[in-house]
Image (cartoon, rainbow, N blue to C red; front, side):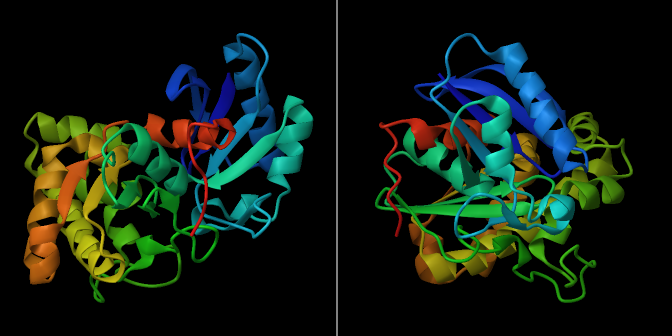
Length: 294
């Protein structure tokens, strides 16, 4: 079995992965201390391990350096940037470790096992603490900046919109992030709380999710006109709101995108849910997942 780890801006997930199935899942707050994070991952690994490990695949939110051994940039995880994460985890776990950008990992898993099956040009957007994206073209991951597609969450969708953690204003990430949605909804402390309130009919929570969906749709339209996908999947915690987000996202996408993409692009909800990044990270050790890169 392979250990799959997904380090997010809010929570970290650890699981055993075999042939694309994640089991024995552990979740804990990511925190803000690199040494504590490594220790928590090791403790979770000891609780879920059932035998020898082939290796560990670790998905990290943000940009990786060219060697893919540490986080290079993420304003939501600034304390982790520059820390020798791959080396520290390999030493602590006693096994080989491979790092991947979380949006790449989610895109890879969805392409082979979920909503991207059969797509030639597959764009997967992952919305949670922030907004990231990965793309597969003819089965290969596309890498531009930061060992990934680039900072797609910082496509500007409203120049008069809220300030973003990157220092800009009106970025898609600022408008679809968990923090912004929670503030707009005034319902609970987490995105899950907002989704629960919206499903119970809270109008402010419903509008907060719909507003995030509209912003996401505009971002999708801009990205579609750059990368020409034939399918776009919405993944991450925000996608768990289902039609409360996806209906508004698809409507604003159709209204904003050009005529060709309007007819050629299919918009879907990702199938693997929050497990996608864990499974995709572990795929670095699986021969059944081709990892060639454009």
